[in-house]
Image 1 (tube, rainbow, N blue to C red):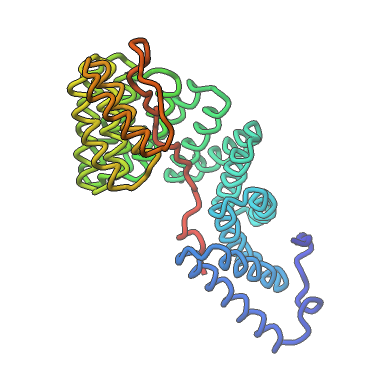
Image 2: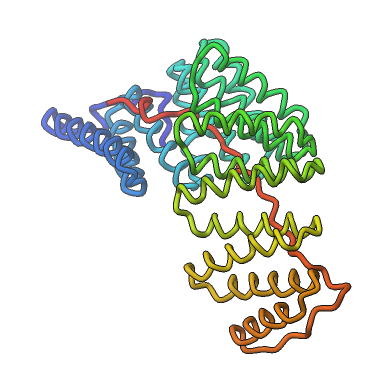
Amino acid sequence: MSDRSSGDSLGVAISSSTELGTVQRQAREQLARGVALHQQRELDAAVLAFRTAAELYERLGDRVRLDRALSGLVLCCYELGNYTAVLERAQDWLQLARELKNHESEEQALGHLGNACRHLGDFERAISYQTQSLTIAEAIGDRQSQVAILNNLALAYKSVGNHAQAIEYLNQALLVLSSDRDERAEVQVLKNLANTYYSQGDHGQAMLRYERLLSLALERDDYQSAGQVLRSLANAARNLGDFDRAIAYCKQRLSVMRILKDLRGEAQTLGTLGVAYDSQGDYSKAIEYYQQRLAVVRQLQEVTLEAEVLGQLQVAYYALGDRVKSNQFMRQRDALLGSPEEEPSAEQDHHVETTVSVPPDDDSNNTAVRDVRI
């Protein structure tokens, strides 16, 4: 963007009143088009429209609408994951917002700069920008943005290993939310808080938050989220050595996967249950779940997964002392893969390790579609 401090002269930029009217119309159309394309999730096209609107409004010297165009441009670049472009455009937006003394835009531009820096691994600058953004949000009483910024500050501190500071900011965000009912934001913050406790190794505190997340998910019949949270609860319980509770969560997740008709999730959960009983020496129960898993995996028609389950059944039957059954599954596996394997020995590990999974952290974008005004 060019230098705006002198306030562009319309006489220099535009030669006639007819051209002025044409440019004003084009600018309005491009801004409206950008908003519509963003709502339709056609982000690349929206970027082009917002960029064109910004260039036209700069030419017109209309700094208020230029602010709106830059807001939309930065938002779309962020949602596209083009963080380098966010840094460039948000700096332009920040400069303009400060010239206009538009504190809301200044706060949002700083927030985007902080998020972009965090995604690019520049955590020191991320924390600096977000801290500045938080100061403004508190000053203007923007509680919605306060929650978003506190959440994003927590993610930045978690990224540098400062879990205690991350937890402090997330608890502050929940405190703000306690008087502002926003379930979507509460879910986001709770998930990040649970994940942070999990990463810190405080699985008991993590489970308290995951339990709340599970309750919220089931209240709104969000079985997809419930399944993800139940997997995290099972992992946390297992890490605490509470295997009975871990198994109970897995069985609950299995029911959810079946409601969703998610064959892959069902197969994964059946495998986890098999492994859990296998590791406790209850080979008959493990075999029961492995057999169910085999039936589901065959519906998926994935040779690698089927071979894995056949291998699980082979070693589970061997551990149970049933060499005949063990050999039967070994031959099935050999026929499937086309390569013979040795019979398992008594010392061979008879279970596979499951993957520990927690939900991904959520960042908060404190610029919403409603902020792009025409």
